[in-house]
Image (cartoon, rainbow, N blue to C red; front, side):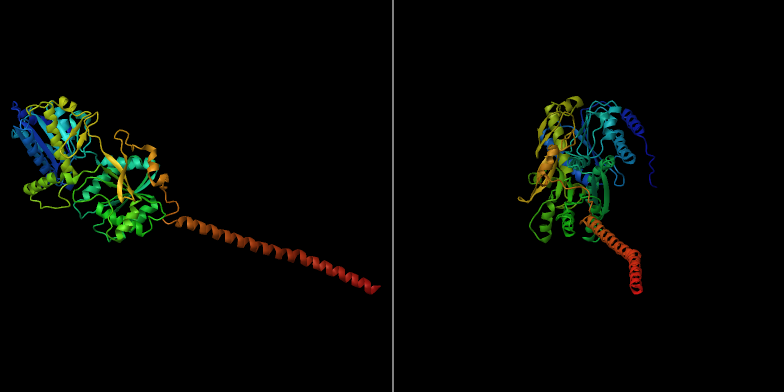
Length: 517
């Protein structure tokens, strides 16, 4: 019999957790609890991706910092496949698992505990506050939002959420004074990476909704895995192009090349001033970012189209440098879940971020002189503010708060070098590009394309208006000419004929007069 959820309130969930915490309260023995929270539904955040990254990281850090990890426990909690994390049902399932661990004595209320999670930290960060815990830290490597209820013990490590990418698109429109946009959403329902596209657009669409009073947005859905190609691309582009000259491409990288080629086919590139924006988030090692290689006719068309393409993305990760680590995580994925090696979908940027979050935790605990027997959140947070950490793959910097500032950049295609180059960086506080209004000078020599297709895709509306005007002019001229001729005829009939009759009468009178004489 299926379980029915009654959508418990957050307060009810917290009360249940606190009851179990108090019921199984024991004195601490210094055990460091690492609770890993993963979601099973989405491919990008699934346990099969994140949990192995955590496992490899904890294994590595245990060797690097043996005093800190001398006595630790890893408690994995995974949200069920059919439930979305962040919903009441999803939160309830996770809390149920948490309660089981407290009930089994695996977790104790005053053990130092770190929540390592890749989803919303709302429940766990608030639980610690409500239960008056002084040794609970929540560290998120997923696209979570800061929780004011637990500030400053909730750390966001991931360098940019979907909302940050969406803010990059809005900042581009504001900088160039565009007030209309069409969004092509490829559902790609038959692919495992469909959640990637959906996730990125879920960050943009709410922002467009908030700006609905001054930005006219139209969302066009298609499915490249079910519809006939390239007909589906032509149809989506045509509908988008009739609404706006600014088109956001919510599509995977491989399909982006085909979409750009289709745009070239139907004349969106030459002389039409259409602009395409692509959000490239959540890097995958086996999938190259948008680029150009001379491999055939489609690429020649794509290269021309790329000159009208802007890319909003996070700063690139050096996957060549990360390869030894990624290979170990991939091997662990196979060991833990039996998933075979996949060169294209074997890993993603979240996995690297989750590994780095454990590395950051270990570095901070080491700097603080803590050995895993206790965690002082206040001391822990002070070690982050305004600091830069040299991790295995890259340097990570924190601002004045405990959230890693998003590193979102804007790229434009350099036709001479045949590659995309960074032209601006997003300011985390103002949500505007670092170059401000001067970004116009960086794009197309300062000539900003209009956002409205007032004359239609190929100018057909203006041509129709011109043809109509000419036709009307001709009709008016014909009518005027006809009216003129009619007037002359009427004048002839009324005046010239009368005049002729008078002259005939006069001439007859004179003739009669001469005959009479």
